[in-house]
Structures are given as C-alpha cells and as structure tokens.
Image 1 (cartoon, rainbow, N blue to C red):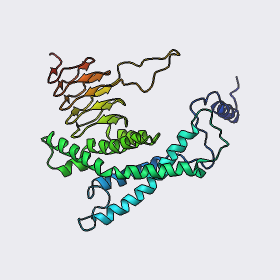
Image 2 (cartoon, one colour):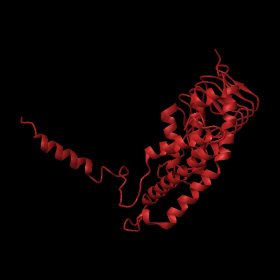
Image 3 (tube, helix red, strand yellow):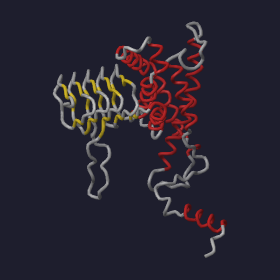
Image 4 (cartoon, rainbow, N blue to C red):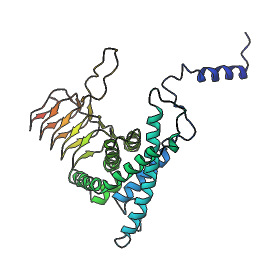
Length: 304
C-alpha cells in the first residue's frame, strides 16, 4: 500500500487542527487593537516590585540610604506604566471573552473608559505597596524565627522560596481584590514555577506566615489563614468535593477550602480538605488527612 504524500498529510493535519469544532473553548480569537497580557512584562513587574519591597536585595545593588528615595521613585514610575499596560490587557482579555460580545465593537486599545480603569487600578495597587511591605516584613521575621539554620534576615530575603512566593502572592491578592482578571493568577503561577509553592491569589493569609522548605505546598482559593501560621513542605489545603449544579457542572465561588486560625502548625505532607476549621494553636502532624474540624490547641498525629 502506498504511503500518503507528506504534503497531503500535512494539509489534512492542518485542516483538522483548524476545525472550529476542535477549537471550542481552546481558542482565543485576537482582534486588532486588543492587547494580550505578556508573561515577559509580568516578570519585569515582579522584578521591579521586589526591588521596591526589598531594596538592595533585588534591583540596583548599589542603592544606599541617600539614593533610595530617588531609586524607588524611578521604580514606582516604571511600575505604574507597566501595571497600567498589563491591567488594561487583562481587562481587554476578559471583555473579549464575554459571551455574546459584539466583536465589531470599539477595540480595547481605543476604549477610554477601560484605559482609565486600568490607570486607576494601577495607582490603587501602588498605594498598597507600603502595607504589602509591612506584611512581607512579618513573613521574613516568621521565616527567620522558624528556622534555626537561618543566619540573617538577608539570607531569608535573598534565598528562601517562601518570600519569593509570598511577594508574588501578596501583590496578586491585592490585584484580585481590585477585580483585575487573569493577571493575579498569572503572577502566582509564575511563583509556582519558580518555587514549587502554589497559592491561589484569592486565598486570605494573615501576618507572620511562613512555609518551611516549601516545595509542593498547595493553598486553595477560598482558604482563610490567620496570623502566625506555619506550614511545611508538601502540605495541601484543598477542597474535599465539588458540588454540581442540575446540569452536572461544578458550582463556582462557594467556600470549599480550610480555615486555619492563628498559631497553627501543619507538618510535611499533611492534607487538610474541605471547609473545616483548624482551631487556634492546633498542630497537625505529618502525612495525615484531616477532613473534620479540630478544636483549638489540639494535636493530630499519625499513630506509629
């Protein structure tokens, strides 16, 4: 039997890959004048934000107390411009994915209202940077106090994956609260790739939070974590089940992840599932599943 000609095979494959039915739900149709979020630009936003939040550890290494105000001013102005651009792109992306949208309408690039929203949102995020730094400072203290191997705050800031993950998360969480689409999740997924720590931007995390080692930690979207909480590597704060609607589709937006109150410690590879409450001061041992509430100041270990 003769083999099909290479050109014929390629043509048939291209036709199959271009078939509208096969693209259903998988294709974002780009329209002239409608920008898309840029992973490369978001990486620069993270670099600049870390340089603002931790000057001298990231960004220009020669910064000193006499030049810091000038240097931060330069960074903040560039951050404002890049944030506005990316938030605008995120708003456009969400707008273009609205069911029933008239794609012949004014391109996003020419939508003055959308541009104004992006600029205002960027300024709101920048105004929150002092509070974000304050929270990150408590996270640095928690990481230092929780690890006898740490020699200095500088080592924590420079090397520890938890601080890199939390700097992304705390920025992303503010953007999520400001109802910016897509961008917050992109920022936390960048941290996930960099550190192995997966924190959904919608999760609520208090002060003095730390994760020892960090690899494999998962914190779901509706988690609420109090102050002075410590997790170890491999911990999952996940959903127990996914309720379905009458059509068999998952119901979105309902609380389905754990609540960890203040001063909770969760050891490595523990899995806590469902909308349960782990009370203040609890200790959850390694390699166990928890699917029911724990009263304050109780301990749960795997019996050996």
